[in-house]
Amino acid sequence: MAILLGIAIVLGLIFLPGLWVQRVLKRYSEPADRYPGTGAELARHLLDQHELRSVAVEKTEDGDHYDPNDKAVRLTPDKYDGRSLTAITVAAHEVGHAIQDQQGYGPLRLRSYLVRLAGPLQKLGAGVLMVSPFIGALTRVPQLGVLMFVGGFLTLATTTLVHFATLPTEFDASFGRALPILERHRILKPVDRPHAHRLLTAAALTYVAASLMSLLNIARWWAILRR
Image 1 (spheres, rainbow, N blue to C red):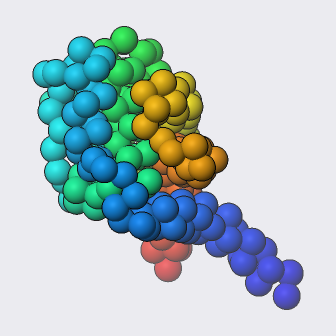
Image 2 (cartoon, rainbow, N blue to C red):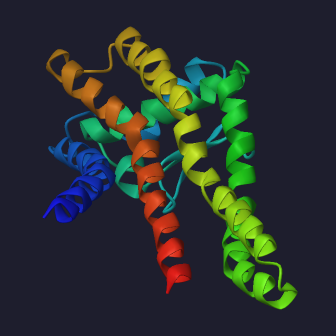
């Protein structure tokens, strides 16, 4: 019974943040025409107001994000074409990242470096985890296999660490940039301010949800190797 309870608690800790984020984003996606302009139009307006006319606003299917390499704010179709509170708030959050980039915000540059590093490292870690038992068996040096396993495991875990390391950047984009901008330009309806605060928290916690889900990936590799 205690084991089942422990498993339930762990699964709850992993899944609940992501479910809460999705619930908040969906909740304020209605009414769909709450604001006169779309998320894309607001992003373009705010970028122009901050002398970021060279930053593009693009539609994407790969999740809302700011690309510091291509200098582009990318929004999913529901945010790009949407006029809901969610569309407006998420667009402002991504513009917040563009402003961070313009100002040379250190944590954003660190995040960009870590994100570029995490992808190859995750693939490398997965590969090392898969071959480490065979290396140990072929060389008849079990310690080598164990060492490779530990190295692969730690490498695979870098994705989780990267997501947690980007939290300061996300919260700054939400509450140090987006919320003050929305208030300064009087974009939000007064009644929407507390809801926007909740949405911006959800936008910042997206990386927490992603990092917790990545723990399942590590657990999956662990289960495979123990078979």
